[in-house]
Image (cartoon, rainbow, N blue to C red):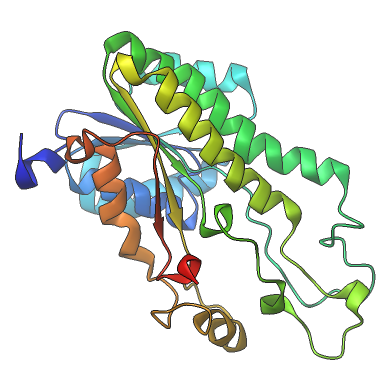
Length: 272
């Protein structure tokens, strides 16, 4: 297969974790656009139903759902047994802690006060979940000598958060909100997992790559958008659909000679 035909996933089955979220739906739509049957997984049944309804209106019965807790090996194995062979796995599930400016007291997002319980919770979803899903679904791919895994990382896997983006005028330094330590740590670790798995399964037909998106505009406050846009050479945040083609490329035979790599799509922010 060459050219545009190499993007075709007709007859293939893909599974997306965290599929009820903003980008999860987009990743699912990207795969369905090129012919895949897509299984949406998430921990919340109601949110999954909403996602299936929205995507099913366009893609029909090629959109399926399965409630799955990525932090539970039992839950992941149960879904694997239910859905059968998977050709494409998108490890998208994560907790993205939103930075808000409404807390005027002790700022728990700050490193000095960040709760160990929250550290463990976020790592369980964003990193251990990707490990479990890769081990269970990826092992099946390796057994069939074919498959693709895409780990959704972030531009904050290759650069540090610029905490000036979240600064609140007039707030004491010790109570300024920040992007918590967990997000960068988890996304950076996903790159290590990507490289490890790519090497581990290189001779078994399983390709493993990462996608590192930049910030996606989603009705953010105007001041935040302006601050972030000033850090991006292209001068704007990403639009919601601008990662679809990347997901299609990394998931399909179009990227047949690519493994262990991190595709950064951030409007140029990380080059500065």
